[in-house]
Length: 119
Image (tube, rainbow, N blue to C red):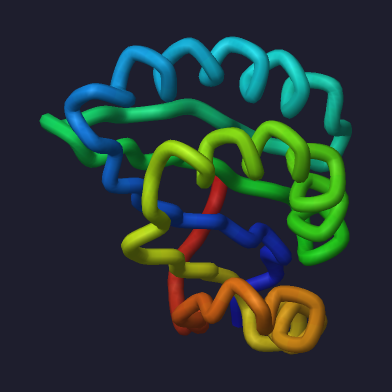
């Protein structure tokens, strides 16, 4: 049995060519904001052509909800110049259940962890 409440958010943004520099300019503020969140385990961005991915993990569903609340204004700016083309939430079933209603508006795909370990 896995005893790990870690939840990861897996968003992908499509950013138009003419907005990519503007989008990248938001990233340092997003990282600095998230650095202050005690339930955040890791957070960073990867970019392939015009697709920006945020790689982020939280200790539990509470951490995810706290992050969504705190990052809200910066996320709104990012979404004003990009399109969220995919959003996945990964974690244990009991934590994902806590996210279903609060994140319904974002229409994420949920992935339940079945087996694994974390050091």
